[in-house]
Image (tube, rainbow, N blue to C red):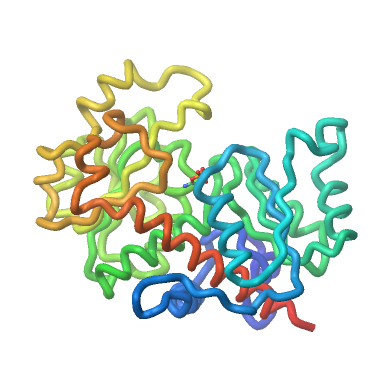
Length: 318
Ligand code: CP
């Protein structure tokens, strides 16, 4: 649990976005409502002047397609200047520390930092050390991916206005998933009726039930009557030893096929944070099918990231 003073000020206002842990329903609703305002009546995301004259720096120490690109687009939609630091061409390759890099960028008058890092806690460390600048965690190790969880809440809320009536099933490699951890905290804060985790024992953290979730080791029982299904990929890059017999065996037991999807409620929503691995965790036809919101999530990510950046800059006004 974070010290409340790191992410929230003494009035409970968000100073950084490091995790969904400790956010209230009011914090989350504020962000979702703000994001909704960026959509025009025909569903286009509008250009606004909220961050005119500000510079946003993106520092991605891990690969990314969706998060990096949508942060850049979101900053540009807010009329900010954007600096994308190319880590492999930066002086971090000469041994410069993360903090020194950030201090130099702050000296270049960057006013907001978006950080993805393989080490859990890296954005927290920077938020502790660097004064006067908001930090957004764009994914740290296995720990948290708060903007992904918030865009997922936004996407669910667009289709079901009341999360307190929903059964949400998160399926796959929970053990290595920063997305799942952030989703669980957000779903709990929004009083979701039932949160289910479906995973093989080797891919589910022990004692996770303490977070108020139900664990299922069989896909068929876990999916029964679910309203929302969130699929996760196998994060093989984080597995230090083999945790599964094979990807084919995993697909047979945990892959979302038409037969498995039929066990959930009719018209159940299918989400996936991406990147998807077709026919490993999700049947290709379902990823492209009518119940899939995978690409809608990506679009919503722009508006959610606009909402978070504009809120943090508003809260940092002297
Ligand atoms: N969902 C997500 O974080 O995707 P990227 O790794 O492409 O940013």
